[in-house]
Amino acid sequence: MFSHLSDNEADAILAEARIVRYGDGALIFTKGDPGNSMMAVLRGQVAIGDPSPDGRHVVLTVFREGDVFGEMALLDGKQRSATATAAAECELLVVPRLSFLRFLERRPDERLRRTNEQVEDLAFLTLERRVAKLLLRLADEAGPRPKLKISQRALAELVGGSRERINKLLQQWKHAEIIATNQGSIQICDREALVDLA
Image (cartoon, rainbow, N blue to C red; front, side, top):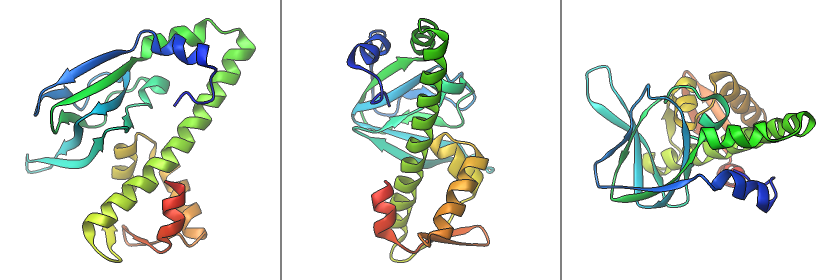
């Protein structure tokens, strides 16, 4: 997330980060909660889910050791789009949005604009990687040459992006013949290309 920053700059942001431990099944945040932090899984697993229309809780994806989630909260601070629960005993590194904003405020105006642009670019690249990883994971669970029934809105919520950006990304991949789309389904045509993107 902060690979474009110097070590001192990254340290300034991470200085206020904290490690939080959750027991198996513990609630981390709920859909609609303020987006006030980014989290990285140091140990364990985190299930991201959403209630279905019939009231059941549907697990949308699972983050494992090394995965980062909630990073868009550092940029927009919007409400959480899903609920996060510890799928096993886990340890998370939590980076508060306030410490990130204070870091930006200490930058001169020119540096602030450049840092914002760099973070936004990085967020887009991270979005691309996240969408590729998610499609590959769903495909692995669905079997050979699957047609993935998932809406662009659901993809956007899962990876913390906007529907517009997801649509643009999928159109690019469709044009490159990496995927094919048909009536709300996505089929992976060039798995190796998608693996490279992930």
